[in-house]
Amino acid sequence: MPKVWFRIALINFFIAAVMGAILRYAFVEEISWLKFRYFLHGHSHVAMLGWLYLGLYALLVHSFLPEVRQHSPFYRNNFIVAQASVVGMLIAFPIQGYGAWSIVFSTLHGLASYFFAYRFWKDMIKDGKASSRFVRTALLFMIFSTLALWAMPPIMLGGLQGKAIYYMTVQFYLHFQFNGWFIFAVLALFFKLLENHGISVAPRPIFRFFWLLTVATLFTYALAVAWAEPLPAVFAINSLGVGLQLAALAFFAAIVMRSHQKIQEQLSGWGLLLIKIAFACFALKVLVQTAVIIPYIATVAYTIRNFVIGFIHLILLGIITQFVLGYGILNNLLSIRSSFTRMGLLLLLAGFFGSELLLFLQGTLFWAALGFVPFYYEGLFCISALIPVGILMILLGRRRNAPNTIPPPYSAVR
Image 1 (tube, one colour):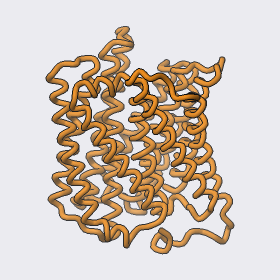
Image 2: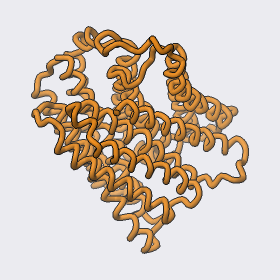
Image 3: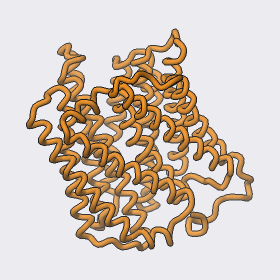
Protein backbone atom coordinates (compact mmCIF):
# COMPACT_ATOMS: atom_id res chain seq x y z
CA MET A 1 0.00 0.00 0.00
CA PRO A 2 2.72 2.60 0.84
CA LYS A 3 4.22 2.01 -2.63
CA VAL A 4 0.91 2.99 -4.27
CA TRP A 5 0.61 6.04 -2.02
CA PHE A 6 4.15 7.08 -2.88
CA ARG A 7 3.37 6.91 -6.59
CA ILE A 8 0.22 9.02 -6.13
CA ALA A 9 2.31 11.59 -4.23
CA LEU A 10 4.76 11.65 -7.15
CA ILE A 11 1.87 12.37 -9.53
CA ASN A 12 0.92 15.30 -7.30
CA PHE A 13 4.55 16.44 -7.48
CA PHE A 14 4.39 16.36 -11.28
CA ILE A 15 1.19 18.44 -11.28
CA ALA A 16 2.69 20.98 -8.86
CA ALA A 17 5.85 21.20 -11.00
CA VAL A 18 3.81 21.80 -14.18
CA MET A 19 1.94 24.58 -12.37
CA GLY A 20 5.29 26.04 -11.27
CA ALA A 21 6.56 26.03 -14.85
CA ILE A 22 3.38 27.82 -16.00
CA LEU A 23 3.95 30.47 -13.33
CA ARG A 24 7.50 30.92 -14.66
CA TYR A 25 6.21 31.23 -18.23
CA ALA A 26 3.76 33.96 -17.16
CA PHE A 27 6.80 36.28 -16.88
CA VAL A 28 7.83 35.44 -20.45
CA GLU A 29 4.47 35.77 -22.18
CA GLU A 30 1.15 37.02 -20.86
CA ILE A 31 -1.32 34.22 -20.08
CA SER A 32 -4.74 35.84 -20.27
CA TRP A 33 -6.63 33.19 -18.33
CA LEU A 34 -4.13 32.97 -15.46
CA LYS A 35 -4.95 34.57 -12.12
CA PHE A 36 -1.36 34.55 -10.92
CA ARG A 37 -1.81 34.76 -7.16
CA TYR A 38 -4.66 32.24 -7.14
CA PHE A 39 -2.65 29.85 -9.31
CA LEU A 40 0.37 30.31 -7.04
CA HIS A 41 -1.74 29.29 -4.04
CA GLY A 42 -2.81 26.16 -5.92
CA HIS A 43 0.79 25.34 -6.84
CA SER A 44 2.06 25.72 -3.28
CA HIS A 45 -0.76 23.71 -1.69
CA VAL A 46 -0.41 20.80 -4.12
CA ALA A 47 3.37 20.81 -3.64
CA MET A 48 3.22 20.92 0.16
CA LEU A 49 0.14 18.85 0.92
CA GLY A 50 -0.07 16.67 -2.18
CA TRP A 51 3.60 15.79 -2.64
CA LEU A 52 5.55 16.36 0.58
CA TYR A 53 2.82 15.56 3.11
CA LEU A 54 1.58 12.45 1.30
CA GLY A 55 5.11 11.36 0.39
CA LEU A 56 6.13 11.53 4.04
CA TYR A 57 2.82 9.86 4.99
CA ALA A 58 3.76 6.85 2.84
CA LEU A 59 7.35 6.68 4.15
CA LEU A 60 6.40 7.06 7.82
CA VAL A 61 3.71 4.38 7.65
CA HIS A 62 6.10 2.08 5.76
CA SER A 63 8.97 2.64 8.21
CA PHE A 64 7.44 3.02 11.66
CA LEU A 65 4.40 0.75 11.70
CA PRO A 66 4.26 -3.05 11.89
CA GLU A 67 3.20 -4.50 8.54
CA VAL A 68 -0.19 -5.60 9.80
CA ARG A 69 -1.02 -2.00 10.76
CA GLN A 70 0.27 -0.59 7.47
CA HIS A 71 -2.65 -2.34 5.75
CA SER A 72 -5.22 -1.04 8.20
CA PRO A 73 -8.31 0.41 6.45
CA PHE A 74 -7.85 3.55 8.52
CA TYR A 75 -4.60 4.60 6.81
CA ARG A 76 -5.98 3.77 3.36
CA ASN A 77 -9.18 5.75 3.97
CA ASN A 78 -7.33 8.63 5.59
CA PHE A 79 -5.00 8.81 2.59
CA ILE A 80 -8.02 8.88 0.25
CA VAL A 81 -9.55 11.78 2.19
CA ALA A 82 -6.26 13.70 2.15
CA GLN A 83 -5.78 13.08 -1.59
CA ALA A 84 -9.38 14.09 -2.33
CA SER A 85 -8.81 17.35 -0.46
CA VAL A 86 -5.66 17.96 -2.53
CA VAL A 87 -7.66 17.49 -5.74
CA GLY A 88 -10.25 19.90 -4.38
CA MET A 89 -7.58 22.51 -3.61
CA LEU A 90 -6.04 21.96 -7.05
CA ILE A 91 -9.37 23.00 -8.61
CA ALA A 92 -10.54 25.61 -6.10
CA PHE A 93 -7.43 27.72 -5.49
CA PRO A 94 -6.71 28.67 -9.14
CA ILE A 95 -10.36 29.72 -9.54
CA GLN A 96 -11.11 31.59 -6.33
CA GLY A 97 -7.93 31.85 -4.27
CA TYR A 98 -8.71 31.75 -0.56
CA GLY A 99 -12.43 31.34 -1.09
CA ALA A 100 -15.12 29.20 0.49
CA TRP A 101 -14.33 25.95 -1.33
CA SER A 102 -10.56 26.20 -1.01
CA ILE A 103 -10.94 26.80 2.73
CA VAL A 104 -13.30 23.80 2.98
CA PHE A 105 -10.78 21.51 1.28
CA SER A 106 -7.88 22.93 3.32
CA THR A 107 -9.86 22.33 6.51
CA LEU A 108 -10.65 18.77 5.40
CA HIS A 109 -6.94 18.10 4.87
CA GLY A 110 -6.13 19.59 8.26
CA LEU A 111 -8.68 17.35 9.98
CA ALA A 112 -7.34 14.30 8.13
CA SER A 113 -3.83 15.18 9.34
CA TYR A 114 -5.09 15.34 12.94
CA PHE A 115 -6.63 11.87 12.67
CA PHE A 116 -3.44 10.58 11.06
CA ALA A 117 -1.23 12.04 13.79
CA TYR A 118 -3.39 10.60 16.56
CA ARG A 119 -3.65 7.11 15.08
CA PHE A 120 -0.01 6.97 13.98
CA TRP A 121 1.18 8.02 17.45
CA LYS A 122 -1.00 5.29 18.94
CA ASP A 123 0.11 2.57 16.48
CA MET A 124 3.84 3.23 16.23
CA ILE A 125 6.25 1.08 18.20
CA LYS A 126 7.32 2.84 21.41
CA ASP A 127 10.99 1.94 21.63
CA GLY A 128 12.58 5.14 22.97
CA LYS A 129 15.00 5.33 20.05
CA ALA A 130 16.12 8.57 18.38
CA SER A 131 13.88 8.04 15.36
CA SER A 132 10.80 7.74 17.58
CA ARG A 133 11.66 10.97 19.40
CA PHE A 134 12.05 12.85 16.12
CA VAL A 135 8.88 11.47 14.54
CA ARG A 136 6.76 12.35 17.56
CA THR A 137 8.18 15.89 17.53
CA ALA A 138 7.50 16.15 13.79
CA LEU A 139 3.83 15.30 14.41
CA LEU A 140 3.63 17.86 17.23
CA PHE A 141 5.07 20.55 14.97
CA MET A 142 2.58 19.61 12.26
CA ILE A 143 -0.33 20.07 14.66
CA PHE A 144 1.21 23.25 16.11
CA SER A 145 1.52 24.80 12.64
CA THR A 146 -2.19 24.30 11.95
CA LEU A 147 -3.11 26.74 14.71
CA ALA A 148 -2.56 29.34 12.00
CA LEU A 149 -5.29 27.75 9.86
CA TRP A 150 -7.89 28.24 12.59
CA ALA A 151 -6.74 31.83 13.10
CA MET A 152 -7.31 32.67 9.42
CA PRO A 153 -11.15 32.84 9.34
CA PRO A 154 -11.45 35.51 12.07
CA ILE A 155 -8.56 37.44 10.54
CA MET A 156 -10.23 37.45 7.12
CA LEU A 157 -13.70 38.17 8.54
CA GLY A 158 -12.17 41.10 10.41
CA GLY A 159 -10.89 42.54 7.13
CA LEU A 160 -7.26 42.18 8.18
CA GLN A 161 -5.97 40.75 4.89
CA GLY A 162 -2.78 42.55 3.96
CA LYS A 163 -2.14 43.55 7.57
CA ALA A 164 0.87 42.45 9.61
CA ILE A 165 -1.17 39.92 11.60
CA TYR A 166 -2.25 38.20 8.36
CA TYR A 167 1.30 37.73 7.06
CA MET A 168 2.62 36.72 10.47
CA THR A 169 -0.06 34.03 10.64
CA VAL A 170 0.81 32.73 7.17
CA GLN A 171 4.50 32.66 8.10
CA PHE A 172 3.68 30.83 11.35
CA TYR A 173 2.09 28.02 9.34
CA LEU A 174 4.87 27.87 6.75
CA HIS A 175 7.72 28.10 9.26
CA PHE A 176 6.54 25.24 11.45
CA GLN A 177 5.55 23.14 8.45
CA PHE A 178 8.93 23.54 6.72
CA ASN A 179 11.34 23.73 9.64
CA GLY A 180 9.28 21.68 12.08
CA TRP A 181 7.08 18.98 10.57
CA PHE A 182 9.02 18.36 7.33
CA ILE A 183 12.59 18.64 8.67
CA PHE A 184 11.94 16.57 11.78
CA ALA A 185 10.13 13.88 9.76
CA VAL A 186 13.15 13.66 7.44
CA LEU A 187 15.50 13.34 10.42
CA ALA A 188 13.24 10.68 11.95
CA LEU A 189 13.45 8.65 8.76
CA PHE A 190 17.22 9.13 8.58
CA PHE A 191 17.78 7.81 12.09
CA LYS A 192 15.34 4.99 11.40
CA LEU A 193 17.46 4.09 8.37
CA LEU A 194 20.56 3.90 10.56
CA GLU A 195 18.75 1.84 13.17
CA ASN A 196 17.42 -0.63 10.58
CA HIS A 197 20.95 -1.22 9.31
CA GLY A 198 22.51 -1.65 12.72
CA ILE A 199 24.48 1.59 12.54
CA SER A 200 24.70 2.67 16.16
CA VAL A 201 25.13 6.28 17.21
CA ALA A 202 25.98 7.50 20.70
CA PRO A 203 22.76 8.74 22.34
CA ARG A 204 24.23 11.87 23.93
CA PRO A 205 25.11 13.73 20.67
CA ILE A 206 21.67 12.87 19.25
CA PHE A 207 19.98 14.11 22.44
CA ARG A 208 21.86 17.42 22.24
CA PHE A 209 21.20 17.75 18.53
CA PHE A 210 17.50 17.12 19.08
CA TRP A 211 17.00 19.72 21.81
CA LEU A 212 19.15 22.37 20.16
CA LEU A 213 17.22 22.02 16.89
CA THR A 214 13.84 21.96 18.64
CA VAL A 215 14.46 25.18 20.57
CA ALA A 216 16.08 26.79 17.52
CA THR A 217 12.98 26.00 15.43
CA LEU A 218 10.80 27.84 17.93
CA PHE A 219 13.09 30.87 18.15
CA THR A 220 13.79 31.32 14.42
CA TYR A 221 10.13 32.11 13.78
CA ALA A 222 11.20 35.56 14.97
CA LEU A 223 12.71 36.29 11.54
CA ALA A 224 9.23 36.01 10.03
CA VAL A 225 8.03 38.56 12.58
CA ALA A 226 10.98 40.91 12.09
CA TRP A 227 9.75 42.37 8.78
CA ALA A 228 6.60 43.68 10.51
CA GLU A 229 8.15 44.37 13.93
CA PRO A 230 11.86 45.15 13.34
CA LEU A 231 12.56 45.58 17.02
CA PRO A 232 15.97 44.82 18.56
CA ALA A 233 14.39 42.19 20.82
CA VAL A 234 12.93 40.35 17.80
CA PHE A 235 16.30 40.29 16.05
CA ALA A 236 17.91 39.13 19.31
CA ILE A 237 15.53 36.17 19.59
CA ASN A 238 16.19 35.20 15.98
CA SER A 239 19.95 35.55 16.52
CA LEU A 240 19.74 33.21 19.50
CA GLY A 241 17.71 30.78 17.42
CA VAL A 242 20.12 30.65 14.49
CA GLY A 243 23.04 30.34 16.91
CA LEU A 244 21.42 27.29 18.51
CA GLN A 245 20.65 25.93 15.05
CA LEU A 246 24.30 26.29 14.03
CA ALA A 247 25.34 24.40 17.17
CA ALA A 248 22.78 21.71 16.28
CA LEU A 249 24.31 21.43 12.82
CA ALA A 250 27.75 20.89 14.38
CA PHE A 251 26.41 17.97 16.45
CA PHE A 252 24.64 16.52 13.42
CA ALA A 253 27.79 16.78 11.31
CA ALA A 254 29.73 14.97 14.05
CA ILE A 255 27.09 12.21 14.16
CA VAL A 256 27.22 11.74 10.38
CA MET A 257 31.02 11.79 10.21
CA ARG A 258 31.38 9.16 12.94
CA SER A 259 28.91 6.91 11.12
CA HIS A 260 30.09 7.74 7.59
CA GLN A 261 32.15 4.62 6.99
CA LYS A 262 29.37 2.28 8.14
CA ILE A 263 26.82 4.24 6.08
CA GLN A 264 29.02 3.85 3.01
CA GLU A 265 29.31 0.11 3.65
CA GLN A 266 25.56 -0.40 4.11
CA LEU A 267 24.13 2.07 1.58
CA SER A 268 25.13 3.16 -1.89
CA GLY A 269 23.85 4.24 -5.29
CA TRP A 270 21.27 6.86 -6.15
CA GLY A 271 19.48 6.58 -2.84
CA LEU A 272 22.54 7.52 -0.80
CA LEU A 273 23.53 10.23 -3.29
CA LEU A 274 20.16 11.96 -3.00
CA ILE A 275 20.27 11.78 0.80
CA LYS A 276 23.75 13.34 0.75
CA ILE A 277 22.43 16.15 -1.47
CA ALA A 278 19.53 16.65 0.93
CA PHE A 279 21.80 17.04 3.95
CA ALA A 280 24.21 19.27 2.03
CA CYS A 281 21.21 21.54 1.36
CA PHE A 282 20.28 21.29 5.05
CA ALA A 283 23.76 22.51 6.03
CA LEU A 284 23.51 25.32 3.45
CA LYS A 285 20.11 26.33 4.83
CA VAL A 286 21.52 26.60 8.36
CA LEU A 287 24.54 28.61 7.18
CA VAL A 288 22.33 30.99 5.19
CA GLN A 289 20.10 31.51 8.21
CA THR A 290 23.15 32.13 10.38
CA ALA A 291 24.05 35.08 8.17
CA VAL A 292 20.79 36.83 9.11
CA ILE A 293 22.15 37.44 12.61
CA ILE A 294 23.22 40.73 11.06
CA PRO A 295 20.04 42.91 10.91
CA TYR A 296 20.99 44.44 7.54
CA ILE A 297 21.36 41.01 5.94
CA ALA A 298 18.09 39.91 7.57
CA THR A 299 16.31 42.88 5.98
CA VAL A 300 17.79 42.06 2.57
CA ALA A 301 16.86 38.39 2.97
CA TYR A 302 13.15 38.93 3.45
CA THR A 303 12.67 41.94 1.15
CA ILE A 304 14.22 40.59 -2.08
CA ARG A 305 11.69 38.11 -3.43
CA ASN A 306 14.26 36.07 -5.37
CA PHE A 307 16.05 35.21 -2.13
CA VAL A 308 12.77 34.25 -0.45
CA ILE A 309 11.69 31.94 -3.30
CA GLY A 310 15.17 30.46 -3.60
CA PHE A 311 15.30 29.76 0.14
CA ILE A 312 11.84 28.13 0.14
CA HIS A 313 12.86 25.91 -2.78
CA LEU A 314 16.14 25.08 -1.03
CA ILE A 315 14.09 23.54 1.77
CA LEU A 316 11.29 21.94 -0.24
CA LEU A 317 13.15 20.80 -3.36
CA GLY A 318 16.66 20.57 -1.94
CA ILE A 319 16.19 19.01 1.50
CA ILE A 320 12.77 17.37 1.67
CA THR A 321 12.28 16.26 -1.93
CA GLN A 322 15.77 14.84 -2.40
CA PHE A 323 15.58 12.97 0.89
CA VAL A 324 12.10 11.58 0.19
CA LEU A 325 13.21 10.34 -3.24
CA GLY A 326 16.45 8.90 -1.88
CA TYR A 327 14.72 7.15 1.00
CA GLY A 328 12.05 5.83 -1.37
CA ILE A 329 14.78 4.33 -3.57
CA LEU A 330 16.58 2.71 -0.64
CA ASN A 331 13.32 1.14 0.53
CA ASN A 332 12.13 -0.06 -2.90
CA LEU A 333 9.19 2.34 -3.01
CA LEU A 334 10.78 3.83 -6.11
CA SER A 335 12.63 1.70 -8.67
CA ILE A 336 15.57 3.14 -10.61
CA ARG A 337 16.43 0.05 -12.63
CA SER A 338 15.34 1.89 -15.78
CA SER A 339 17.84 4.28 -17.38
CA PHE A 340 14.78 6.39 -18.21
CA THR A 341 14.15 6.90 -14.49
CA ARG A 342 17.79 7.75 -13.81
CA MET A 343 17.72 10.33 -16.61
CA GLY A 344 14.60 11.78 -15.01
CA LEU A 345 16.44 12.16 -11.70
CA LEU A 346 19.30 13.93 -13.47
CA LEU A 347 16.88 16.37 -15.14
CA LEU A 348 15.15 16.99 -11.81
CA LEU A 349 18.49 17.79 -10.17
CA ALA A 350 19.55 20.00 -13.09
CA GLY A 351 16.26 21.93 -12.86
CA PHE A 352 16.64 22.40 -9.13
CA PHE A 353 20.30 23.47 -9.09
CA GLY A 354 19.93 25.63 -12.21
CA SER A 355 16.88 27.51 -10.94
CA GLU A 356 18.48 28.06 -7.52
CA LEU A 357 21.58 29.48 -9.17
CA LEU A 358 19.54 31.89 -11.29
CA LEU A 359 17.31 32.98 -8.41
CA PHE A 360 20.17 33.77 -6.05
CA LEU A 361 22.25 35.37 -8.82
CA GLN A 362 19.39 37.65 -9.82
CA GLY A 363 18.64 38.46 -6.18
CA THR A 364 22.28 39.45 -5.68
CA LEU A 365 22.14 41.70 -8.77
CA PHE A 366 18.99 43.36 -7.42
CA TRP A 367 20.74 43.95 -4.09
CA ALA A 368 23.72 45.48 -5.89
CA ALA A 369 21.43 47.54 -8.18
CA LEU A 370 23.01 45.95 -11.27
CA GLY A 371 19.81 45.10 -13.14
CA PHE A 372 18.81 41.82 -14.76
CA VAL A 373 20.62 38.72 -15.90
CA PRO A 374 20.21 38.67 -19.73
CA PHE A 375 17.11 36.65 -20.69
CA TYR A 376 16.52 35.95 -17.00
CA TYR A 377 12.84 35.01 -17.20
CA GLU A 378 13.30 32.93 -20.35
CA GLY A 379 16.22 31.09 -18.79
CA LEU A 380 14.41 30.54 -15.51
CA PHE A 381 11.41 29.06 -17.33
CA CYS A 382 13.51 26.73 -19.47
CA ILE A 383 15.51 25.47 -16.52
CA SER A 384 12.44 25.11 -14.30
CA ALA A 385 10.68 23.13 -17.06
CA LEU A 386 13.30 20.41 -16.58
CA ILE A 387 11.72 19.57 -13.22
CA PRO A 388 8.28 18.39 -14.46
CA VAL A 389 9.96 16.65 -17.41
CA GLY A 390 12.25 14.82 -14.99
CA ILE A 391 9.35 13.81 -12.71
CA LEU A 392 7.36 12.53 -15.70
CA MET A 393 10.32 10.39 -16.76
CA ILE A 394 10.57 9.00 -13.21
CA LEU A 395 6.87 8.11 -13.30
CA LEU A 396 7.09 6.53 -16.74
CA GLY A 397 10.37 4.75 -16.03
CA ARG A 398 8.62 2.04 -14.03
CA ARG A 399 6.41 1.21 -17.01
CA ARG A 400 9.46 0.84 -19.22
CA ASN A 401 10.85 -1.93 -17.00
CA ALA A 402 10.37 -5.39 -18.43
CA PRO A 403 7.95 -7.56 -16.42
CA ASN A 404 10.78 -9.91 -15.47
CA THR A 405 13.00 -7.18 -14.01
CA ILE A 406 11.23 -6.72 -10.72
CA PRO A 407 13.73 -5.22 -8.24
CA PRO A 408 15.10 -7.79 -5.79
CA PRO A 409 14.98 -7.17 -2.04
CA TYR A 410 16.64 -4.06 -0.63
CA SER A 411 19.72 -5.93 0.51
CA ALA A 412 20.54 -6.77 -3.11
CA VAL A 413 19.74 -3.42 -4.73
CA ARG A 414 21.04 -0.24 -3.16
